[in-house]
Length: 227
Image 1 (cartoon, rainbow, N blue to C red):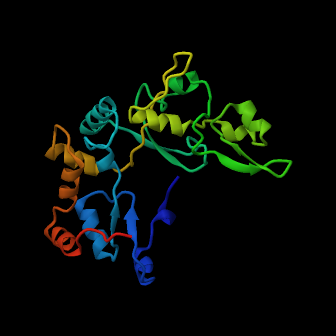
Image 2 (image 1 turned 60 degrees about the horizontal axis):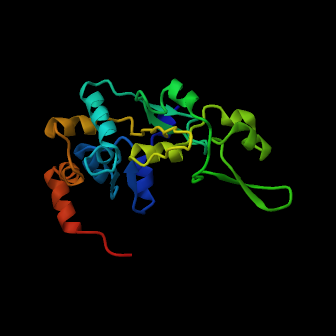
């Protein structure tokens, strides 16, 4: 899905003279140093912090993810249709979650949180909302195309379940989690070597700034100023 055309030209970005940060596949001290060398103010790191002990991720899920990474068995794929918004979404293949086909098919489609609904103009000029993850007949009735619903998942409920806040239906059905991480797992692998029992966000920051020049730069810049 992604190729060479998606690689940013950092030299051209730097020539704009505006501050910028690099996100995606840059979650190591070396990548932070390279980003700073290229003129970036810093990087955006997600996966190392998502897996830390104080991230809010369900502890059982975290343990399974760390075990999979340690064994080099964890698979993260880019699902082009998972998100109701139509944007590609990174999904971790974990049994018993919405990443497996059986669990997905067993869930009755429902959009009751609605954080990713899309507004549309109704015939009377008012604004309505629809979600490609809601029941198909409801989506079509609101003017959506049926083929836009294929493979769509309820990220709202799935991500809430991943942090232990999954809803339980009156039928007894318990919402299953959807787990998302970045596909570059070298950072977590190295953190596992350093902290086999898990790590905190503070330890992740300490590791990210472990190169002397980066630590010195962080001390000089100090905390961000208040808006």
